[in-house]
Length: 117
Image 1: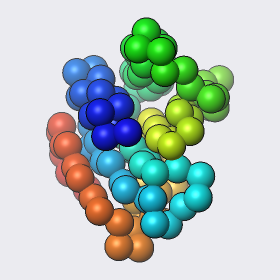
Image 2: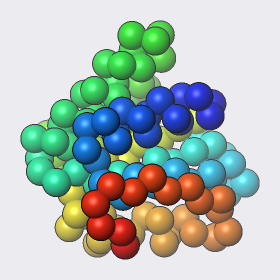
Image 3: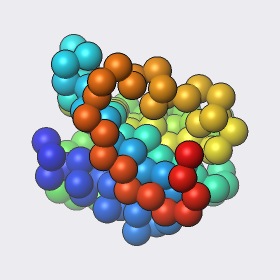
């Protein structure tokens, strides 16, 4: 699980996602172990990040259960079962504040590119 999480964060970082955050939600959730949240700076980057994650993991025989929001393009969720990836535009990320919602004592690791929250 941690290897997959690292692979996803590496893909996000390589494609210039900002404020990449990994939340360990095992103790808080029965649907996932990790939640990854990242910010994209444009709708094009948002779609590209989701596509790169899905195709790279599929090449490693890990296919997403689902991808949601790719037509709306403010927030895309890529669901790998035990790992949920949220890629958001800055306005959506600030509005929904998922990290605050899930911040009941999770272990946080942060990879930052650009400005920090």
